[in-house]
Length: 149
Image (cartoon, rainbow, N blue to C red):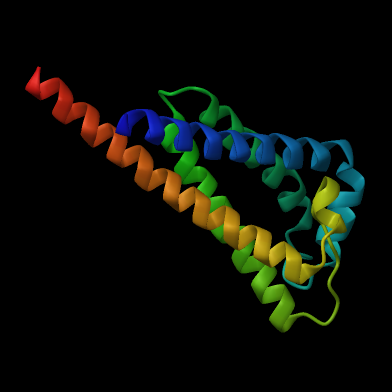
């Protein structure tokens, strides 16, 4: 019963992350010129905007691909935690240190205020950390169960 609940939580949070990375990665690629322009308006990204415009959607889609397979899921979860921590830090810094707040986010996320975006990012970062812990618990539980058999 415990493993069933763990699996359900892991699958649900992983599905949310998978949808997030596919959605944001593809929306940035579909609106590439807009994303590159807005990234170039950021006071912290203007010098690396062309690189960011290519790398961010690529890494988001790679993270999504890693989440699909159980073999690569842990790597995808750590990639997700890295990305979410990076994006959350960026939003926090922009809120506290930037005068102009251009939005280079993709899709419906650009409809959020910066404060709402920070809250959503914090929640997703926390969920990602939780799913990594749950995944490690499940792995340990399975190893113990196998060794007892």
